[in-house]
Amino acid sequence: MQPIRRTARHSIPGVLALAGLAFGGGCGDPVVDPPVPATITITPTIDFLLEDAGRTVQLTAIVRDRDRHVITTVEVAWSSSDSNIVEVSETGLVTGGEPGKATVQASVGPLASAANITVAPGPRAVLYKFYREMGGDDWVNNRDWRKDTPYHMWYGVKIDTLGSITGLWLPYNELAGPIPPELGMLRGMRDLWLSWNRVTGPMPPELGNLWELEWLRLEHNELTGSIPPELGNLRNLLSIQLYDNELTGSIPPELGKLKRLDLLDLGGNALTGSIPPALGNLRKLNELELERNALTGSVPPELGNLGNLQHLSLIWNERSGPLPMELIALPLVSFYWVYTDLCAPPDDDFQQWLDWIYTHYGGPDCTSG
Image 1 (spheres, rainbow, N blue to C red):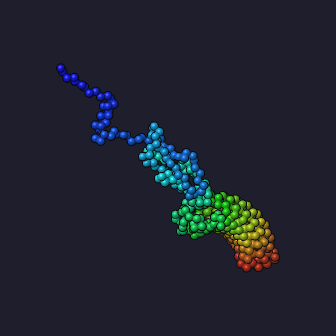
Image 2: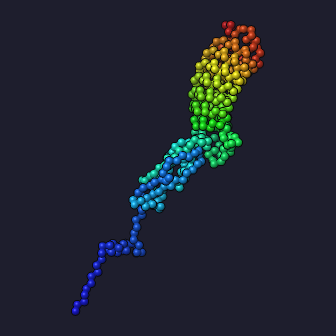
Image 3: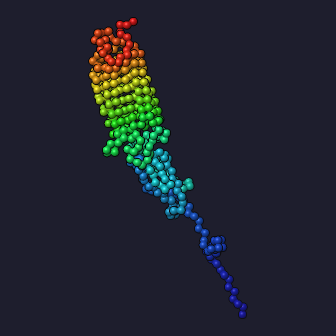
């Protein structure tokens, strides 16, 4: 009797399994392809507002495959559209900088997701912007700027007992560039002292928002444009010093609103037009410096109302005509009006008043030549 022959039969899955064993490296484990990223999403998914600089928020990037399974084995790259506004670490930690809006992006290969970040213009953010736009890296002294330290430790930053910024004292410090308008948000500032630097561009009208300001010292810089009339809003101002810049245009009559003003120094610019009669309202003014401009016209008699004025300089201008008799009411200690086309009235009272002035450099009498 013939033995029965049995033929082995294998199903298709069985064949594939055997093939897997044959080509699986000899260890019996099937080959598993790495997961392929299909989507990437930043969470939380809302846009963020960081209140002032130095504040942080942690973002997370979730990567999924086509079956929406989370993939944890891929490396995510993080970037910021403007690192001056927000910086982002390689783990997705976002830190606010200067005020503004920026986009943070997370990417894996060609896949990307973005989150919008807004940094509110708080004190630290405003100072960051001021530092960058005025060349802070090249200052003579920039101690502790852009560091996570209290304001009073930053060179030139003055604060009160409540921690509010009351002053910026940065003269002779190689500041360069325009004053950022955001500086007007430091509402509690009383002293802005940026003299003897290379500050350029126009004076931002937002400086008129510094309602507590008492001292505005910007002399010996390279400021251009006109004097903003918004300075007339600074009712606490005691001193305006803009000497030796490149300012043009006329003197805004709004400066006549500054009833506490003691010193107004606009000399050494290229100002034109006439002296506004409104300056006669500055009853506490002690010193008025208008020399070395291109001012024209006569001297307004309203200046005779400046009952505290001791120093008046009008030299090197294009003014003309007789000096007003009303000036004899002024208790001047010094009076300079040479190198103009002004003349002194021949009246005895006026001439005697001139003789009483301790330092007087003037032009001719109106009856001369």
